[in-house]
Image 1 (spheres, each protein chain N blue to C red):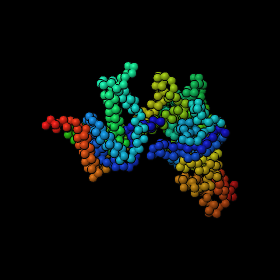
Image 2 (cartoon, chains in turn red, purple; image 1 turned 30 degrees about the vertical axis):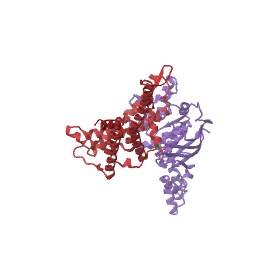
Image 3 (cartoon, rainbow over the protein chains, first blue to last red; image 1 turned 135 degrees about the vertical axis):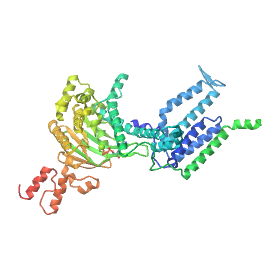
Length: 275
Length: 283
Ligand SMILES: Nc1ncnc2c1ncn2[C@@H]1O[C@H](COP(=O)(O)OP(=O)(O)O)[C@@H](O)[C@H]1O
Ligand SMILES: [Mg+2]
């Protein structure tokens, strides 16, 4: 039941995107997300959309699966569209009763919705193709320069890795305990707010107990294997850039150049003519 | 006929690449009062099957009838079903949550909407049935030993007075003594109350001594469904499924091969002992 949430989850399959170095994907996602907010004309959107479609095709993640996870943000999307549609002033397109839709409003609603969709799909594409461990490895190595200012980069990355690792385990545990209490006649769905809150007790107490037990076990297991933080620690599978990673960086750069060029075409032409 | 399982299929994670066909075309009839063992290697679908019997999982296709009623009918009271078909999960001690043992056992009957007096009577009875020492009734369930916790958890389901009791690997993770205690307790329950009992296990030795009927599961299918001695005669097939016949079956086979006239089909230790003594003329 709880397993239907797909946003931020990893999708197991084999593809170029899956094999890419996590640092490339992190930087790529960042660049892509920023680029989405720099366009002012349709050509820019077209390039960003094309780039996204290309990445989706390369990822081998079924589009249907991606969309399933989007349902949870449908609500936010709707609100954005409606607000932009009805509350933008400009040339009137249609007007009935108290509602007027302007040309500018329509344009804004469409572009905002498009932007939001691309933003979320772009971000989830990264988590769908990168295991949590890989992601934190990438973060740790990518942010190593912060050590200079005494940031405990390794510890933060380790905490993130453990937290991410525990999410599916805790979800599974919740599912199990929920079923066990349902088998004892528990009812999680009916009743008012107070009753429902109280119905959560038989779920939350065992969940916390088990989370603490697991945390304790993990800490002991780590100590038993002499874990002592990041200093002097080497990796079994160190992140090393391969040919495809350099190729990906070049593609990313190309995307950046093209999208800046096209997306800012009007600005450029203005600049050129003024010279 | 208490429970009928009709062409049931179940798929975990349908529509994803990781879909697992956990149950394939299961057909079963479970009459009242039978003591059934469900055996299978880890991942063969035992837990998935038993979670269908009280409506916790809904079959991808097929239907299940309890006392003649289709449990997937609209408006069928699943909560009511769960009070009749009690399910004790694997590692049930992980579901304990109350401040003391007694209140935890009260949770089930309380959910049935019974009076306070009736709830407490049932909890008391259930704890007695599982042989839980009275002086520990008001200690925290988290302070108990593994075997004791498990008894409390089983009592928590028993207190709802189910007609069918399903135990999913009730001996997992217990020491040999704890195992035997739990199994003896289950046998006693069955004899005293006449409940239908389904005992899930991956060890033949656990169930051979006790049950009337064995279901062997492999890769989501029921491969054998018969009385123990018939099932154990398929030793080779069982081994292919990473299962084994009880140890006495192997001893008797070896003896027979060595030319000693014993009855190969004895399934319990007692039966085996008597046929061996007989063979040596020592009745
Ligand atoms: N919650 C779940 N999600 C996905 N697959 C599952 C889940 N639970 C069990 N499975 C899979 O279904 C199959 C049967 O599992 P299960 O019924 O637990 O077997 P058993 O109890 O016999 O060990 C296994 O292949 C297992 O990996
Ligand atoms: Mg199981």
